[in-house]
Length: 85
Image 1 (cartoon, helix red, strand yellow):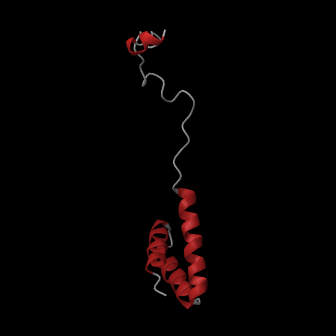
Image 2 (tube, rainbow, N blue to C red):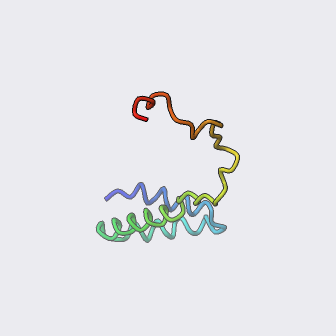
Image 3 (cartoon, rainbow, N blue to C red):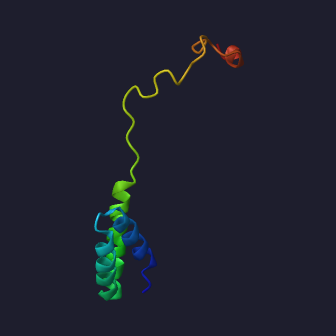
């Protein structure tokens, strides 16, 4: 099984590490030595870890204050429904 995705994940995480020169070959070598089924598990776990960090922030209450404007006659009856009133 090719592990190009895992290599990309390991490289991106290793680049953020202070020990990038050591971490990348160490992790990549370990992943390469695993059987294909276990490499798949590592890939799924890497996906899980990536999904944990890519969540968007939950907006705070009032964060849209001043950004939404309603017209002054918002509650006024619509002329389209005059025949029903």
